[in-house]
Amino acid sequence: MNAFVAFLHHLAFLAIMLMLSIEMLTLKQPLTLTSARKIQIYDAIYGVSAILILIIGGLRVMYFEKGADYYMHSAPFIAKMILFIIVGLISIQPTVTFIKWGKSLKQGIVPTLTDAQSRKLRMIIHAEVTLLVLMILCAVLMAKGIGYLGD
View 1: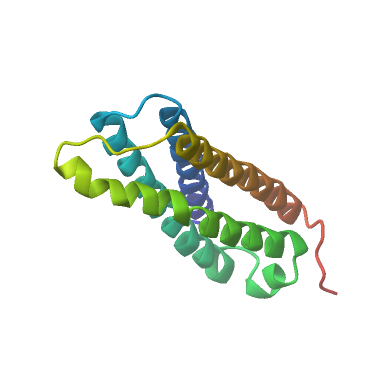
View 2: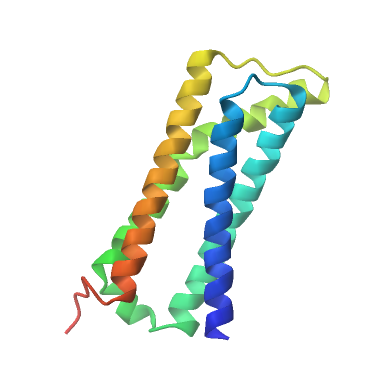
């Protein structure tokens, strides 16, 4: 059961990375009705995946792995959680932007997105991906017991 729960956790993380990468690539192209709708879908999948990571990760910490005490004394785990919070906070602006597109998309109007706005969204998404890569490093360090602050 531990392996299956870990698999689901990693799968949700992979989905986040994939959705952000697709969003970034899609934003490099001129925005169309179709691409704007797809970006909204990608961002929704991103959000669901983030929620799954929190739920599954919490279950892993509490029930399926080394126990909460171990993780609360692991510097890489704490860093990983801080990075996850930062990613969540910086993801708010792109998500709000994509949600605001809903009204014009329902009317069949392509949302306005200047080159500067597109660059800014891509820069934020790139930062998210970079921080998520650092989370992978933290996970590896944590799994190897590096940075454990207990006993």
